[in-house]
Image 1: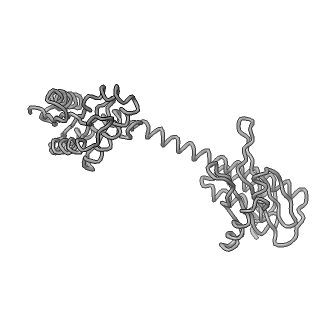
Image 2 (image 1 turned 180 degrees about the vertical axis):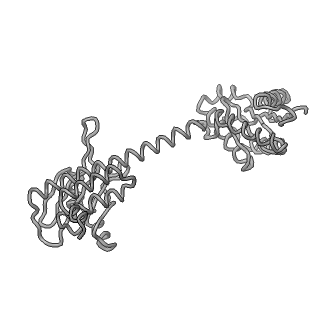
Image 3 (image 1 turned 90 degrees about the horizontal axis):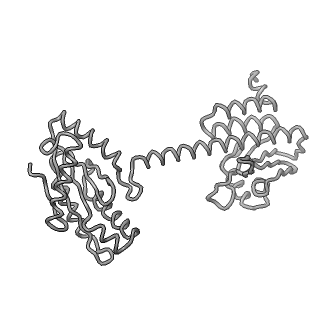
Length: 327
């Protein structure tokens, strides 16, 4: 046996190896395999298992084992379904359990001076084994390191999820899930730059919900929000994969349509919205204005202004109208 293996097979060597895995590990399973595997070897345990408590589930579930084949894992999973099983009891009751051939420890961390139970860990021997006090103290320390490892990786996962959520929130409209003004502006600048290089067209179509103020007055804010979500879903479903749909605010929506198909896309949107059922006794319609690059504007600001002007002219013609710029 190599010197490093001999060192890892001792309780002190196991703790050193486990602490290093915890400090430098980037994968929870690999960290637990190193930490728990060396600990089991140090005390001669034939297998070890960890159950974790998911906040969204009623009880702890077997999530990690060492030294068990598939049949053994399945058998332990069934046995741990009994609340009296050491692995489950230690997690639920948050207490150490020392049996004739196994020991179990709760996995507990403290946050803001409040203890939180994460699950439990058990070490088992192939025959009757009465662990000495120093073995129990060693395995208790290992359980604490496992608890820290689980808590750390859960926090990392939570931070990553929150970061992803904030990133998504920064680019989407929270009411409709469409792109927001920030994303729209960025995409339009990129499309205009591409069209300028390729000497191609880009259309911007603006859609305003007709008589939206009256809808809000009649149906209330929640009813108005329902109308906006319905319009957003129709627009998103009517456009092409290459198009970008955004909500600029209020009842104003916009589509960036690369190429020369902007008017065709806008007409399809009007037809699909016209097929929506009435909301609180009122038809849902939109007025639309379309402007084209480079004919109606050579930058984002002038192009959007031209599309808004066309939409304003469409509103004067009646509900559900479409107006393109004179160019």
